[in-house]
Length: 279
Image (cartoon, rainbow, N blue to C red; front, side):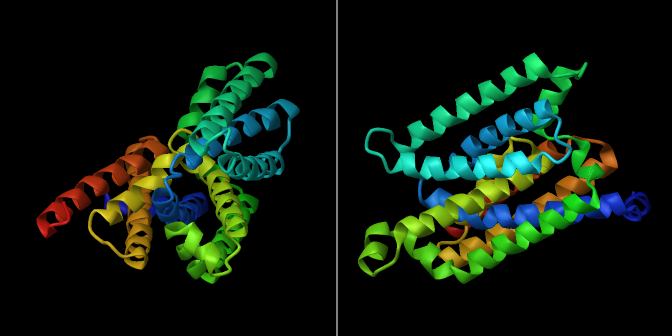
């Protein structure tokens, strides 16, 4: 089996998939801690459905590079969700639910009406749950993922202290002169970028697990923000690698296998937490 694995790794497209998978898992885990602590976990789910609707539009218009539509629309949706969440008439969870179901329904409707594919159900299923497209990445897709991932990592490191302050106490951060609205916007735009990158890896319905599971696993063991963030990143990368290698060796769905590894890691962390007294 090890020989078989090394044989697969000799192919460039497999190495591309592993690189992209690791980068996406790393970026997703960093912002996941902030989203969990801010009680805004479902923004990943909402934005993934927006990305699905945008992909449907790109498919109907026949764009060869759907990123030209998916990324801008998802970024705009992230800003709208942030603004709606601050509106007293439409709370954050209601805004996410509204945009989420509308985008999902709109996307499927467009694909049903205008699709030229003879396998509509297969296309929709692949988009929702992930497909083998992660193993057919072009060099442009890999380079774009690397550039966007590096930008996300730089943003998180540079604004780490501000993100920390806004995550735990917005009122205190505002009192100390921090532009809370700006940093909430940075968080929303960053997570939207991660969602778009993760679409090819796990599909739109499983993205929330990729964002949330590592953070929840780390919180079973650690209590400090930095320790939780570091462990979340490490465990997310390990689960992504294991999931992709298992998928390559046994032919299982990539996205589902990665999420299964994340769920298994969560159970292990829960047991370690109980043994260590965190309960």
